[in-house]
Length: 529
Image (spheres, one colour):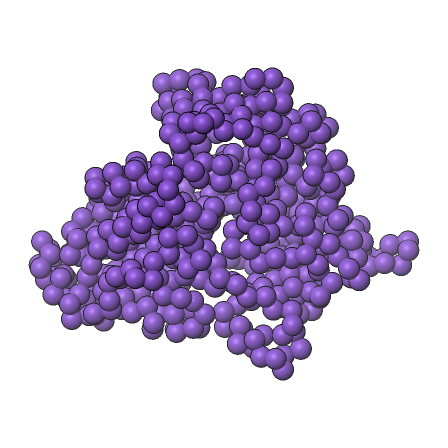
C-alpha cells in the first residue's frame, strides 16, 4: 500500500564528506561515485515504518524480500521461493525455497523463518495495520491477530526448504499479495536483539545496509551473496533531507529525481537540454478524501453526495495539479484491470449539491456540526489540495471546515487508531494489479484498511463472491459493479489519478518507471558515470 498525501517536509541541509580516492576518482562518504547510484530521500523517526511487518509503505526492497516478486514488466516472478505447487482445489500452496537463499549474515533462510515472520506480524502486541490485508487469507492467522491462538494453523514447514500454506478459499490474487512487505522474511535473532534492530537489519535483499547516519545518508552495499546474483551497481547512496531533489539533479548531485508538476512543461519541451532525460508514465494510484461515515454529518448519504458534487475536478487539476493528473470518477485507476470507461460518476453540480444538503437530516449548512479535516502537515499551514477543496465547499455549500495537521511521522498511527476528524486525506496505489486490491481492501466492512467505516452488506456480499470467482470476465464485472455502488453511495470523494514524471541520468541503465514499487535497483547498471 502506498498512501498519496501532501507532505510538508523540513529540509535539513547535510554536507556530504567529499573527497578523492587514491585512484583519483571522486568519492562521497568514502564511496567511489562512479560505482554508486545516488538518490535523495527522507527519514522518519517512527521506526515502525522500517519494519516490514508494520510499515504502511511498500517497504525497503533493497534490504528485504519475500517468496515472490514483480519484475519490471510486472510479471510475477519467483524470489526466495524458486517454485511452488497449488493444490487442485486452490487452497494449499507448497513453496520450495532456494537452496542458496541466505540472510545477509550468511545463515540459510528456512521455511521456519517464514512461519516466525508471519506469526510475528500477526501478534496482536505488534498491532500491524497491514497483516490482515495481506496475510489474512491464511487459515488460522486471524485467530492469532484476535489473540485466540498463538500459532497459525495454516502454516507448516514440511522440511527446511518447503513451506506449506493453506488459505481459506481459492483466491486467484493470493500469490500477488505475497509481494507486499508484510510477507517479507525477517531474522528472529536480529528482530529480538532490541527495538532499534531496523537500523542494523539482517535482511535477505539485494543490498545490505552499510551505514545509516540520521539526517544525512543511508549507504547500501551490494549483497555479493544474493541468491539471484549480485546487483551490478555496487552502492546506493540515499542522501537524507539534503535539499530539493530536482535542483540536486540539475547540479549532478543525484542521479534520479522526481519532477514537480509545475516543472513538467519545462522538461517536456524538446528545446530543454534535459528533455531526453525525462520519463513519464501513468500510475496505478487514486487520490481520495475519506468520509468517516461513523461520525456526523457524513453518516448521511445526502451530505456525502453534496460534498462530492460540490467538488470541481477539472478546476482542482488545473490549479493544484498544474494540469498533470486525470480526473477520478471512481476508485480504479486507468490501466488497472477493471477500469470502467462506462462508469457513471457523480457530476460537478453545485446547485444539486446544495439541494442534497438541504434534503439531509441536517437541513442545510446551518444544521451541520463542526467539521474537522485531518491532514499530514506542520503547524497551521494548510496544504494546497486541502485548501482548494475547503474553498470549493465554502463557496458552493456555504460550509466552513477546520483543518488539523498531524506530524507526518505519526499521521498513519492517528488514522488507524481512529483519532481523526470526519474528513481526512487518503489515497491508494496498487500493490498488485487487481481490482480486489482497491475495492475489497479499502471498502469491505471487515477490512482493516476501511478507515472511514463504510459498511454495505450488499457490497460485502458482492466482494466476497468476487474473491473466489475464477472466470475472469465475470470477476471483472463484479468489481465494476462494486465500484458503481461505491460511487452511488459516495463512500469517498474520489479526486484524481496521479501521473508520474522522473528525471534519469543517461548513464543510469535499466531503469523502468513502474507503476508498482519493485526492487528495481537489482535490474539496473551504471555505464560511463
